[in-house]
Length: 350
Image (cartoon, rainbow, N blue to C red; front, side):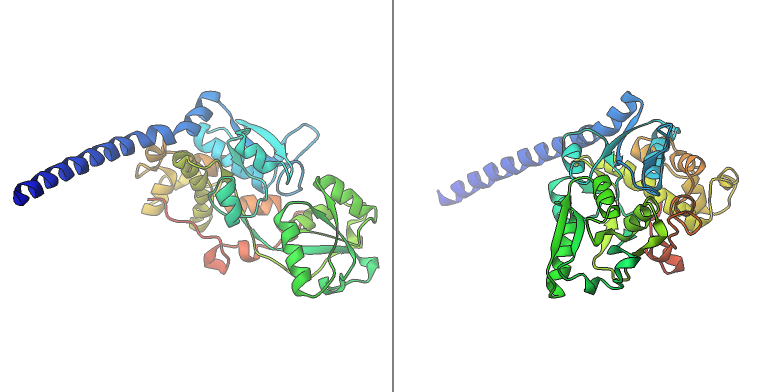
C-alpha cells in the first residue's frame, strides 16, 4: 500500500512539474512581444522623444532657431539614426534636475539623455541606465576675487546647490568628512542657481566639473571664476530608459556602443562609406556588411553605419561639443578610449 501511494505521489509531482514547465515556456515565448513595446511605439510615432537638459552648453542646449546640440543630444540623434536613419526625427523634452525622474516614470519621453549620474537608488527607483557617455566628478567653482583656492577653505561659506540631487548628497558628505560647516543655498532650477551665483548670493557653486566648465562660459565674466582642484565624487553620467523593456534598452545601449567601437576602429563620418569594403571582420560587422545585429534588435542591418554617417563616432562627438577647441575646453582624460588609458570601452558587436 505504501509503495502504491508513493507511486501516485510521484505521478502527481511529475504532472505539476510538466504544467509549470509549460507555463514557463509560454511566458518566455511571449516576452519579446511585451518587451518590444517602446521600439514599436517609437516607430509608429515616427519620432523619438528624448529628455534633455533645459540648457547646458556642450551637453544639451538650443540655439535661437530651437535646434539642439551637445554630447547628450548626439546620443539622441544616434538612436534616431539607428531607427529611422534620420538624426532629426526627435522631439526634445527639456527637463530639470528635479523633474527628470518623474517625467521618465510618467512616460513623457522614451529616453533620458541629460547628464545624469548612475547610482544604485536611481537605477532601482526610476529606470535602467544603459551605459556611460561621460565620466565626471563633482567640484566647486568660486570667483577668483574671493581668494579661495581650495574646497577646504569653504567652511561655513554659502554654496549654491541643486536640491534633491546627488550633488547635494556628495557635498554633505564632503563637508562632514572634512569637518567643515555646510551652509547650502538651495535652488530647484539650474538657470536660477547660476544667476544667483553670478550675482554674488553664494561664495561658491557646486555640480559636476563638466557642468561647472559649461556654466562658466555663460557667466558675465567667465575668466573671473575658477574651478577648484578637488574632485569629491565619482559621477558616471549616462542615458536612462524606462525599466522593464529589454528590447528598447538594447537599442539605446548599442547606439552608444556603436559610437565607441567606431572610434576604436578608426571608422568616422567621413570614411564610413569606404568601411563597407574593409577586410576586417569587426569593421564588416560594425557597418552591417556581415552579421545580423540589426535584425536581432528590430533595426536595419545598417543601423550602426547610419549612426556613424549622421552623427559620427564618440571621439567626433566629444571633440565637436566639449573638446579642447570648444569654449568648455575639456581634455579627453578618463573619457579617452581604453586603448589610450581612458575608461571608454564598449563590448564588441558580433
